Amino acid sequence: MAREVAANIIKRYPSGFRVCADLDFHTDGSVMVLFGPSGSGKTTLLRCLAGLERPDMGRVQFGSEIWFDSDARISVCTHKRGVGYLFQDYALFPHLTVTKNITYNLSRKEARERLEDIIGLLRLSDVRDRFPASLSGGERQRVALARTLIRRPKILFLDEPFSAIDATAREQIRGEIKVILKGFQTTTLLVTHDRTEALSLGDKLILISDGEVLQMGNVDEVFNRPVNQKVASIVGVETVVPGKVTAISEGLVTVDVSSERLFSVESKDISGDVFVCIRGEDIILEKDVASNSSARNRLRGRIRKIALEGPIVRIIIDCGFLLTALVTKQSYQELALAEGSEITASVKAQSIHLIPRV
Amino acid sequence: MDWEAILLTTRLALLTSITLLIIGLPIAYWLSFSTWRYKFLVEAIVALPLVLPPTVLGFYILVAMGPRSPIGGLWEGLTGGHLVFSFGGLLIASVLYSLPFAVQSFTSSFNSLDRHLVEAAWTLGASRLKTFFTIMIPLSTSGLITGVVLSFAHTMGEFGVVLMVGGNIPGVTRTASIDIYDKVQALDYASAGKTALFLLIVSFATLSIVYGFNKRRIYGWPGR
Image (cartoon, rainbow over all chains, first blue to last red; front, top):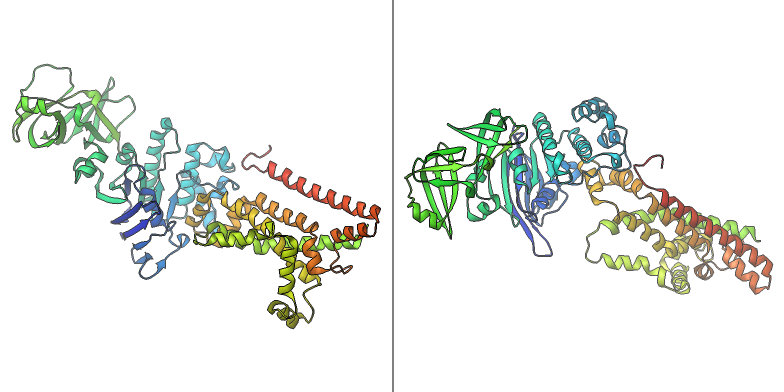
């Protein structure tokens, strides 16, 4: 049964910065991404929900449990909330071995019943008797995750979980983590400022900036339909649509997006469901059904909407899916574009970026 | 050498260190976690014995412990004896005098702990008390040992406060440093020299052990 989490809190800092968040969601096992630029209050919000930080005002509720209520002077201690929290630096206990870290504060019975499963699942059997200082970044993360997941938290908080992992290993580890989270069906709230991370891991997205929640919704929805200019500038003007990889030959990846077929160049192995990302400035518009050009992708569509934003014009084209193109005002005038007119959009295969959805 | 005085001093120093470990830890925990606006006042009070002349501290303790004061009166009602010029009174004075050595060492080692480790323990369901004993204490051992040993060494050599509060009763309140003073007054330099050398060696040895121990304490590199 899905339980509802509702939080409406204000947290002020002496510097004048304040986090003023109002959000609610169901604990249905999905991964929610708390996305926003650095210093936007994401971690503060997470810490308030976990009880590590005390809001100045407001209320936090988890199902029928009230975790915090400034009016009723209720503030449930972190250790009684039953949440899981993965710290950015993993916070492994340096004086305990991997096994002792994982079973910390568990009863002997629980430890006996659950330890082997979790060690197997997170591939930790080789390092089980080692101390944290001798582990790699990825191993530390798996230990921290095992330590949290073994007590089956009601909700899992991940604070920038991949920032301490070097870029080369990040993608692979991200895939592993996604599989593990899906396996546990634990509702997860993940903090990140990395859009690739948000797109590849998130089911839903909560966009936060300057301490305020600006938009909540499905990941592609927020990326494609920002509610205002501020959200648009944070997510970047880009088309993000779900697609499916159908073939790969000689480095050219074929992706089906609704009824259209797109081609992309991706050096890494990719298959199955993906998010297709196309930046608005990479799209070239032509009035006619143009003859030959080097662009691999040529999409015929109808202009849905035109928005003038200073020297740049944003054009939304319906070509089986909604594509957002950015052109200069001069091009817009020369081509005499109008809502409802037919247009051809060309995109080079290198400009189509694929993000795997596990 | 006056073995009676040395034994008495050692006993006093041991009991002082143990008492300070028990009362110093909660004070240090509070100082390290509290966000109270006026916390600095408590910090200043704890540090006072560092800068106050021992005679001033001793004078106030003497007045506070006198039979006509509430503390002295209560002690007399409970035990029937005087607090001043007794070993119990001496212990209380020593604890107050060495308080900053213990509390400041404990607090700084708690402050240098990675706060995330403490919070991680809380998120793993451990209560504050359990976190304190299973995470904070084991990871602060060097600071705890430093605090205890400094209090011990400081008490071994204390003079002014002891003289004010304890007087000079052989076997009850006559400590090694007072013994040295007495011997020098009596021009018995040979005996004073022996006791002084003994105190010097004990102090040097304890400090060497502490610093040597703290240097070696690095986690995660077994066998090094």
